[in-house]
Image 1 (cartoon, rainbow, N blue to C red):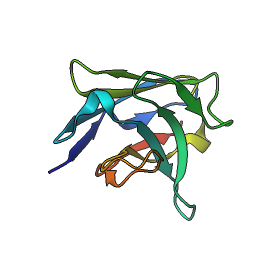
Image 2: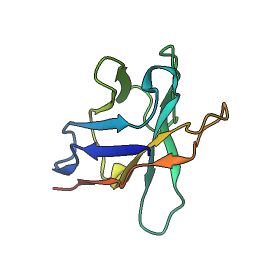
Image 3: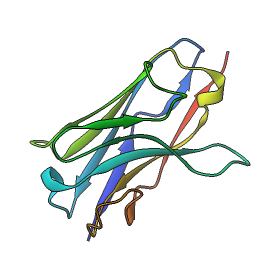
Length: 120
């Protein structure tokens, strides 16, 4: 079965950085589109960034220029480098995979989420 395991969340001051990781198993990672989503309290889950199997990327307007999504197919792992963090980035961040494949995100597989808190 598909397993997506996020790590790297935590508490950081405004202006700081964090790197999230998503380790995937049970899928053919190299041909799977992946994405990061987040959900803040009282808000709907939203797309943060997505990456196709060939490495094309897409970002939410609110994080463009501050966040970078990447993938290492040899390690079956996706990353989200988050710089210049703001309090409004506080949320639970979820890893998502287009598995089973439909060609669209969000896909059918989710991780358990990792909390990111930006506060002084």
